[in-house]
Image 1: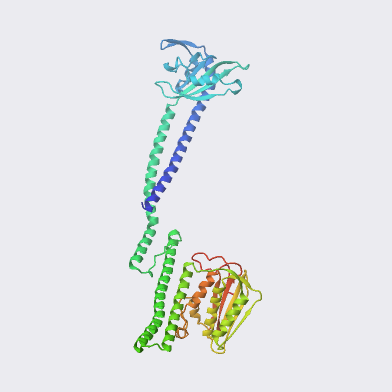
Image 2: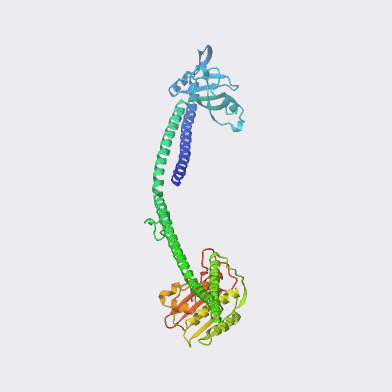
Length: 491
């Protein structure tokens, strides 16, 4: 069942429920009002009937073969179809109005109401309004009152009734009108609801068609039209386009990754294959060829290891064991390693705030800093400087800076330095043996620490990488987030 059909059914059902409640309320209220008007007329008739009944002497009349007392004074009520019956204390009929039908001559207008009035305690006597039904006649509304002397003695009962035929007819007419109008209203609302649902979901249909077209054409560069109205469909279209942007970037990044990996592995494989062919042709192994094989094999091993680490970081399964780490010791080790890597070509120095201890993974943190220091050394000319600094920042973070006096990074390349296989100076990086994964690995490890890494650079002056890490044990970053927030800004 389509959403359009379900919306129409729900809309119609809710409207039908509302109309039903409304019609029941109207019917009950109108009925109550009509009964109240009948009761008011009966009460007024009762106040008028007793003086009229006593204004003249009762007459003996014979009806249905029986002699009864009629009250001629009540004949004035004939036109109003009001029936009056005067009863004795024990229920005997003392007199009736002349317009009472023969069926009422030998019984009370409402026997149950009479018994209820008789059984009422003296201090709880009240006027009774009831309905009664006699065979062959329409239902009647009956008013029953006890006739009490000032001494408290009950000398009789007065029952006044009127036909409810007009009320019942009005009720039936009202019921037919409500059912007819309600049915037409529900049918009309169903048609209008279907039209509105179709119109409201038309942009969704267009969105679906566009999505299917993109899927069939495998063209992630195509976008859906965003409606001008800032409604749910407009926001859905905008979100869909943003998703396509991200998918397009990921798809192109995947293509670029495959191309870069293929290119990176083709070089060592070519060297290995050439040296193997050379060894086969020579029939013996020379040291130079064996060294070349070892170097290229190690290079491939490092490349595969780096790619494995990045894939683990992407999947959120990068093994990280946090413990108390003394930054003074870690940075001292990185400083010594940097001095070995520089071989005296550049000056590597460090300055760390005393007693700086954080919760981190020491091996991974050392890997990040070594990547940054190695990258700085490679891009700093002879006689330059590479400096490592660590100090407390704000919001319970520490900042570790690795700066150099190298050639710097062009401003246009800064947004891409953490992308995989991205090289600012591609020829020089390949000459230095770089694969373009070092900064990507550093970025992923810092994210796993729930920190952030930023870069600033000026061509011809130098580059600075700032790593911000929480002092306390970091929470794992939420799925889909880069862990580089926490209210922190680059400082």
